[in-house]
Length: 320
Ligand SMILES: Nc1ncnc2c1ncn2[C@@H]1O[C@H](COP(=O)(O)OP(=O)(O)OP(=O)(O)O)[C@@H](O)[C@H]1O
Ligand SMILES: [Mg+2]
Image 1 (cartoon, helix red, strand yellow):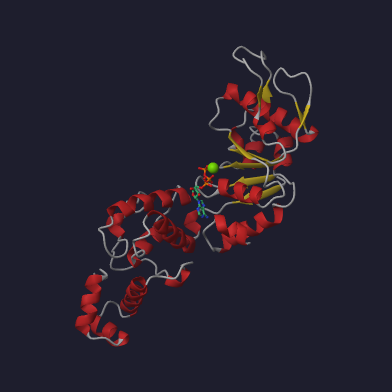
Image 2 (cartoon, protein in one colour; image 1 turned 60 degrees about the vertical axis):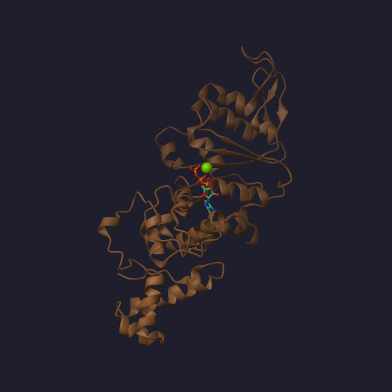
């Protein structure tokens, strides 16, 4: 599990299942189909599978089927011989050949044109390919991993994806969970990105965590990463990262009373020990919540004087 965990941050039950699936399938030569919304980590899964396979010393070649113009796609995948078409001034190997002995990762495979789906299937079945204009077959030994944000089964049923290729690719499906369904991971990931972008910031303010957890994250982990990268620019130089540094699109600040947290995320979620400041701030925050922000009761519970509590509330900006 360790090697997988090295690439990924997240301990939710849904991600545990993903790690388990990677561990199971990586050592075998089975084709893997990774499904999930944009930014959920599909490319990371492909990387993990390759790294943990016996092919790890050989190349991992990725092709984004959505990014290559349609008329260049065939040559890109299968290569061409010199003079095969106008502009083919040199013989060029395709991505299949470049991945020889290793793994070919076809990203956005749902965008592969119909006619190339047939050619792709033939290569998978016969384990040989012909470059465009090629006279002889070349042996290929590649492991195939594909990813798509589409529901390939639906695409197949609508006649947009070849049924025979679908069954050939969907040997071992892995479904990436959207971030909005794993709040625990939101905090872990946010702390991870905070450490990455601004190691000097002592952590996330409890309200920042709540805001992050309340967000829908349509762009998933990528969106969260971008959000943190932007937020650290607005940090005012001391203390934890405050919620007003976040600019969240899918969350309406004005409808939320920041004094009434939507959800309390315990500190113990962190994979790294919290800073002393963060621990103190959290303890006070938890106590304030338990005591409905009544300062006398909170101070009593914490065993400190009321004035000291007021100073700390100010310092950690925990007030209403
Ligand atoms: N569990 C995770 N832990 C750490 N980083 C992650 C995790 N999941 C995703 N990321 C990071 O989020 C970003 C998006 O991930 P990735 O490119 O793998 O998503 P994707 O599903 O392939 O997205 P798309 O469909 O848009 O291509 C990357 O920077 C990746 O490193
Ligand atoms: Mg991707």
